[in-house]
Length: 120
Length: 173
Image 1 (tube, rainbow over the protein chains, first blue to last red):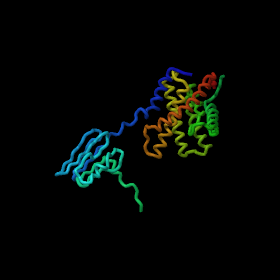
Image 2: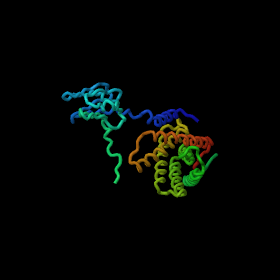
Image 3: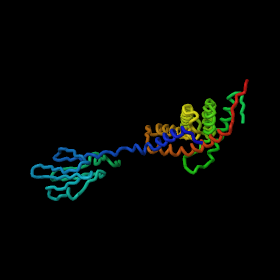
């Protein structure tokens, strides 16, 4: 048997049940990109596509940010390991390191995972 | 059908026994969905609420939890406390809803609200006991969604009971 008041009850219930799906947590915002050069730390926004150039003396490092990914586009160092490493996604652990130019690029909060396991 | 009674105690006694038996026999009813039980005892509570015999409904609701807990060997254990709190909350919700809406609400809607609140009370207590925090997430909607099914079943039974034209008449002393 159906009565008019039921509509209110059913719609409230449907809202209650569907609530968690509607109120889905807003996407976590893009983590910041941490660029450490010569022990000085800069932060870049991962959501903003741009190219950063870090110069120290005759060395220069070009860091490209695109689609929430980061890579070292160009570097004046000898072996270019940093360029060969390619793109670093925001879900990736680890970082891109250019030893000769003393540049470390990583996503903040991702590479600092702490200790995985300890055996005693 | 007219049911005459001298004192409410008789009705409470008889229907508490009936509700407890229903609750105990539900153990043997296998539902296709795990963790879901019908809760037919709630149909009796609902019947009394809709007959405006709130005190009888409340007494039956509490006594059947105690008797059910006693016979299933869980009296005063943690599941019993969950069950008791669920029964209290579902009774309050059904009572308040019926009090506000009266003629504008059907037994099925009342029963669904009762079932959802019963399970919500249990979920809240469970999370507070074992996790320390309860959040409004997917788990809540799954539990609430699953409790709609037994709610409809119980509500239908209560609706059928309610249509039987049973009159509760208090005998003059």
